[in-house]
Length: 374
Ligand code: PHE
Image 1 (cartoon, rainbow, N blue to C red):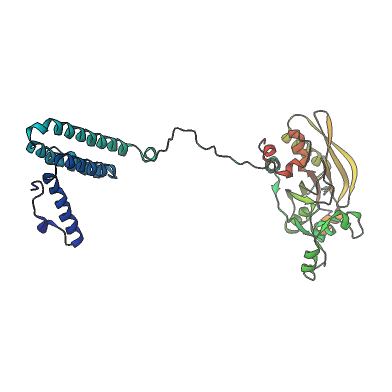
Image 2: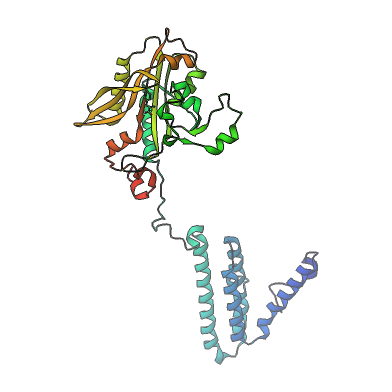
């Protein structure tokens, strides 16, 4: 007779038939040890106890299992002890030993489970948080992007703000407004990327009926800024330009330029030289000398090629000059009232110089071994 749980099931069972059945069944099982032979009862007890302890999902469930299987006052251990007491005296030493073994194993299982549940979730899941983690590969900005950001920063300190312009340009902004007439060799289709499809698509849409092209210079942005802004102006514009060219260590059919434009009441060539020198010194550090060589650009007058000397070598940086009065007129400025300077520098060259890069193609190959060094 199960003393521990008197037969009050009908009074206690919840309304659900299922629960009632389960409880009734448990009760039947619980009565079994008293009729079974003790060894079988020990085994049965151990099996159930280990299963219950092992499956205890939290401290409360474990405590409930402990009370049931190891509880001193009224646990199932006591039932088994009762069996011992009833066994014939000559069997008692053997049964006693068995009883102790079972009890020890169940107690150990309880302790093991208790420790396990006390560990943090991560440790229980066999996760060793002391092991070195999988290294996170941190990306970084492309060396040219870094260079451009630095250029913007330096020029920003001189009061130049950053302007953007489209890479897909029309002939008006790439040529016409820059004083480059129709028959100028710079407009040769062999020297530019005209877009055949875009020309067809935009036919009749453009007031000048011109073609669409990949811009060949960032000077286009000078026009776009002046069209929408009144002087004074101080801007830089950095971005890609495209020219059909055979790729080699120093040429690429796509590269980057920084355009600069300053327009105001008395902007001079001397200021141009100062800005370029201060800029180059700020980027490269140390003493940089700037040299102007006479040159020609349709949109500046006078025009110069800009060279700089750094650590003993001269390097060609790009073109510059005073904004041509025709250009100022094309955007509705009065050349009698304002003057301006403009420059266009190759960004790759600066970056190559500073980092001792000898082949421009490295920038575009996207070889991580190269890029990781910056
Ligand atoms: N746009 C010219 C080039 O790409 C450079 C330049 C810019 C020259 C501004 C004069 C003034 O070669």
